[in-house]
Image 1 (cartoon, rainbow, N blue to C red):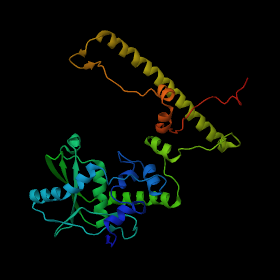
Image 2: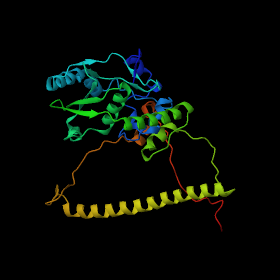
Image 3: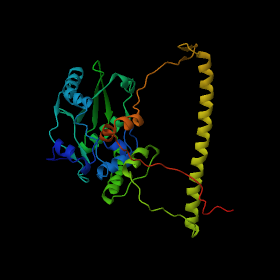
Image 4: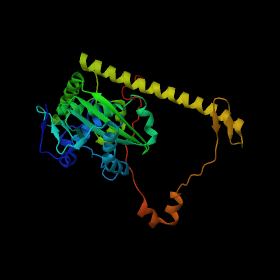
Length: 321
């Protein structure tokens, strides 16, 4: 199915905004724990900078250990693997690409090599595979036209596992359709739907505000409905904040009871729980005193950060007296 292209891996990495690769597809499907569709769109359209992972030690070590993982896979399975020198492209949608870790010699199989910390060992229990990697491997199988993929992982430098995934055409076709729809958003410079996890991305995208106030007042049936829906959403936010405040008060009340029982002891232990109330030190800089006594140092090292704050109040201009 795929076309093996002359595009190198370095070309794809350098120009990631021009392609959809295996590490992108989970975000496009909103099934990534690390990135939303909006975040990925903002990176592809260069509205926010793609993270530079070249200096991250875990990534560097993962790259260096890739050959070791491949060798372990060969040792455990007897299957001979080789590097895939070029990048594969979808024949109909050349912006959909796959860079494969290893191909299994003499078969229509491929291998993806991974490493992870011991703290993520539970993600690999039994037949479990992190969903981002399942989607990545399925993407590679579909782009290359291969039928079986293996994923091998070195966990904490101490445990090695490998697992098999068979190609699912229906699943891959749905991934391609989602990728096509996402790419239209990129080409047309229109953002995809926002999800709850997009708060930080929105702050980064719209870090500054103009003086323009959007005025939404009912003029016809359509705008009346839009206004009512918006006001219902705002009222819901206010209601949730009220409940949050009540819950926080309840938590504080119960914690105070516990502190009064613990007093100057370390804590309390029951058959179900261990509660500790420990002393901790925190260093704070007295900026007021520094400004008064060493203004030149204060001016040299002070940092001014800018951020936007959302506030909801009643519109007094339209309130009925």
